[in-house]
Image (cartoon, rainbow, N blue to C red; front, side, top):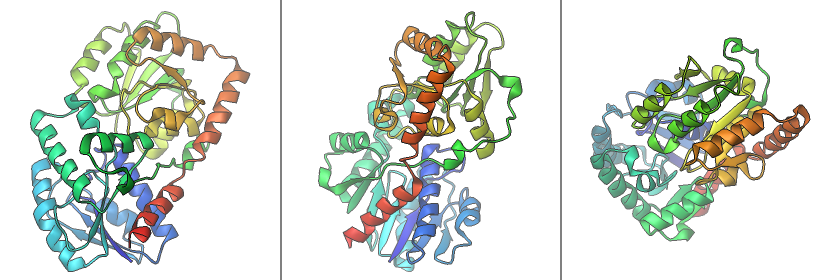
Length: 368
């Protein structure tokens, strides 16, 4: 079987969890299924990265299109016009598009991964033109794809709700977590300790301003810093205003960290807070659970599917509730903290990338 993979959406370091999803799933697929040919269609930004990751596998070929995905509309045109032409030359059995959108037509069957419907539930994350374009393309993909991959039961329900796609065409393939998050690394963050950690780009729905408001209510009661890891996005003005209200130099901003640096930050934190109001999966919650740090999050979207009863929930829209839960967790006795961490890590260990890859491959095998 030969599968072409549409990676035109991927801008390394810019698309968050969808980059992790693509690279980790492909990595597990190449190791578990050497009999499957994979033809990756790349762009100018991601070609070097994907060649480094997958160019050494004999079953993988890479086909670069001269388009920059940072130009959203050039990428859309390339996906609809240039991609079908290269697929005609590659002659795969399937085209898999892991980034929400796909060509209207190609000379093979198609699978699309729609990770969430965030642009419908939280439209302020995109400009009006981007919202309209995204909905047109996602709805077309949902109607024309032979199979749709969702990454949680919540996302599956959202896809049905917003596109009208029949449930029986959607397969849920939960994501995994890198077991490296559970391995001890040499601490390199002593200057930041003690600290509370949050990992998210500043999209409005990530709700980081509410976390900062909650932290501001606690600055006179706890010795911690607040470390925010992520890039500025459309919610940045609101976040910046909230930060300005926190006295002293108690908030640290970071971005562009290596895997090792991120793991070290997770493992040395006293608390991980993820106040997001919408998640198709919630990968940072899973990473924190594996890393052995208590998690405080909002009971929104898919997060209860991931965290279960092994994380603490607060009302993400209420900064006082967030502050109260943060203070309570930081005051846990060591034995209580260790018990919660142990249970959370066991639960996180049930989510693996080999399992994601296995379920993904079954979508193609069963569809033949």
